[in-house]
Amino acid sequence: MVLTQDEVDHLLKCLPLKHQLIGQLLYGTGLRLSEGLRLRVGDIDFSRNQIIVREGKGFKDRVTMMPLSLKDPLQRQLQRAKVIHDFDLRMGHGVVYLPYALSRKYPNANRQWIWQYVFPSQNLCIDPRDGVTRRHHVHENTLQRVMQEAVRVSAIPKRISCHTLRHSFATHLLEAGYDIRTVQQLLGHKELATTMIYTHVMAAPGLGVRSPLDARALAGVKNVSAAHASG
Image 1 (tube, one colour):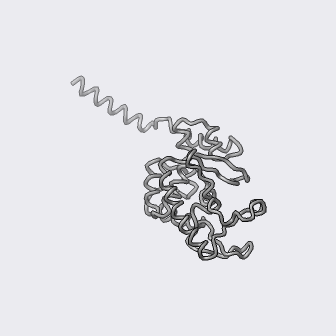
Image 2 (cartoon, rainbow, N blue to C red):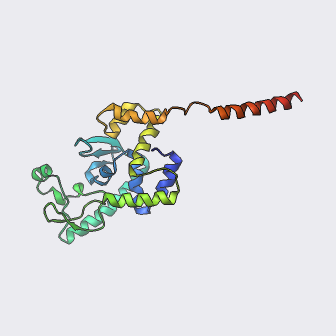
Image 3 (cartoon, helix red, strand yellow):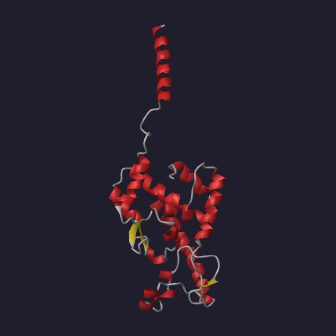
């Protein structure tokens, strides 16, 4: 399922203000929901206008562009996240989860700012993996719930999920004339055949064919016009 650009704009405006940036990021970069929520401060390169996706599907890193229109909103989001992190440190917390290899290589990195989540959760919680109280990122279920509410409010008559924004990102890039291999890299697809699905959406059978009903109606209009001209 793919949305038009107008539908995307309308849907994103129906999201709660505090979640609009995440929705805009998913559409503007093609990130999967989990990839967007797991972004850490050090993954955003404002000087190069790039976003690094760590351990995406297939456990591979990739680079995608940062929408220039989101540069200021992302900087403001980091300012809010920094206030939360500084408060957690004062309260004796501020430790973020790091994958095992990173935690071994950088044993003191879990309190550093660059490793904190861009979209931190509202609440601290006990991590079941080791019993440490941490502030995780916003939960996927939270975004899925607010997205479904936004779909209801928008009244767009399509089956829509957070992943629909990724589908729309890819389709709109291809419609704009971008090379399919470039889109493949941005999406992090291992196989080109996976990206080719979006070309099928663009060239669905019948979309370039005029219905015979419309052809008859058009012929009728021409006949009437010709009769008026001759009269």
